[in-house]
Length: 176
Image (cartoon, helix red, strand yellow):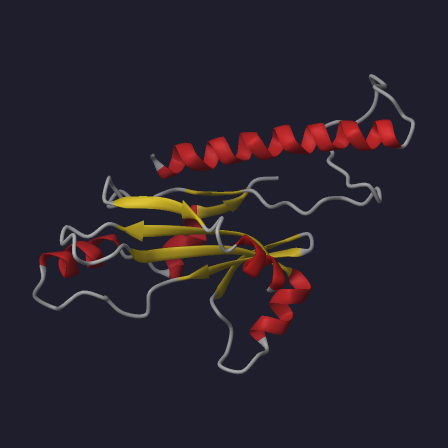
């Protein structure tokens, strides 16, 4: 699926969930379905603003059908324990089928307190801050090196698809 399409679909899903949560919270608070209520302003049960978690990335022209988007649903509990709300990986699918997919980019949405702990830990931060939102920090993890042999076809293909923080900072936006 095209990365741009995926982020739009995720943003629409987030809006639907936020509106449904807001309506449920209003009913719990006894407000009912007042026409003047702000359904577009998501709130949790404690009537505090929910952090913006949705984001958009303008994918580089080099990202084609050899790049896929993967959510780490299996690691959700492990990530939540680290204070990560969501994680999304953009993986290169090598031509050599004996090699597994390799990450081109990881985007992690941290709770801001958890990020402060992670960034101050031994070994330095586990990525670079791309943007901050209310109560959250958007962190990118990029490959430190090309995982393929220097003369392999996958090495040059992986290199063509690699991005840097300068590109990411121009192409990444939080959807509010």
